[in-house]
Amino acid sequence: QRRRRHGRRAQGRFVVIRTSYVTTTKGLDRAGLPMRLFEKAKRFGVWNPSDLDLTQDRADWLTLSGPERDVLLRLTSIFQAGEEAVTLDLLPLIQVIAREGRLEEELYLTTFLFEEAKHTDFFRRVLDEVACHQGDLDHYAGPHYRLLVYDALPRALQRLATDPSPAAQVEASATYNMIVEGVLAETGYHAYFTVLERRGLMPGVRKGVALLKQDESRHIAYGLYLISRLVAADLRLWDVCDERMGELLPHAIGVIGDVFASYDPMPFDLAPEEFLQHAMDQFGKRLDWLRRAREARPEDLAGAAGADLALG
Image (cartoon, rainbow, N blue to C red; front, top):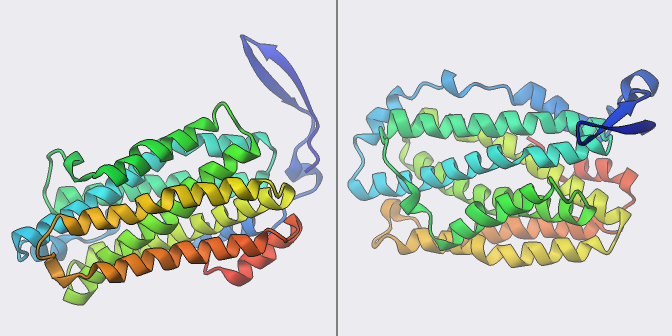
């Protein structure tokens, strides 16, 4: 993108003085994936958690056994912490993309923070109005979950504030979009929705999760695009992505194991094999797509992503 810049220091910081703007010189690339995702976010991502009717959900909650309530409370607390974590630490990624002058990507990324904030709001409503739980839920975070969401995720995203390098961007997106969203959250939402759908429980929560999954599918699509764009420009970055995903996958799988190990018998007759397989399938799909994209030209990535991904 054509954007000439001059810089000068003011009050100890470097200030960018712009001499032109993309939208007044060349316009927006509306055919590219970032703008297509932005269009989808504007169309499908403006749902309001406050509009969901949770009356029946509270009534259903009161019919559950103690262990059934506990496993749903555990899953909800895991989602709640994860959504808050990203809401807190997403800004450095947006700032890096903005500083690079990638306006179309920045426009779409503005919806990321809005949507993650809404997800945080949604799960807090579930805790407040369905479970009616006001206490501390941190004890539900096992060692694998803590490593991912309390450590690896904020560390990778916050690093971008001081290290905007392509390698740091790949590591951040692999951590956030590929593992935390693409494996851990996708599997958790699958388990959550499966439990409620099979029993016909909590229609408001199910609707919220379905809307939330649409948002997350767009986030994952952008993560695939971002990593592929960076790797296509420098193939050495493939090793950064591959190593990071391989490093964190056992912990995502470990979260599933920690949940099932907490119950005997497991409420709702859930089988660990189903969800372990779901997690591995999600991981495999993302890794296979990225492997194919290694050989693509950066300008081909938008079309490939649109053809291969369900963007929600």
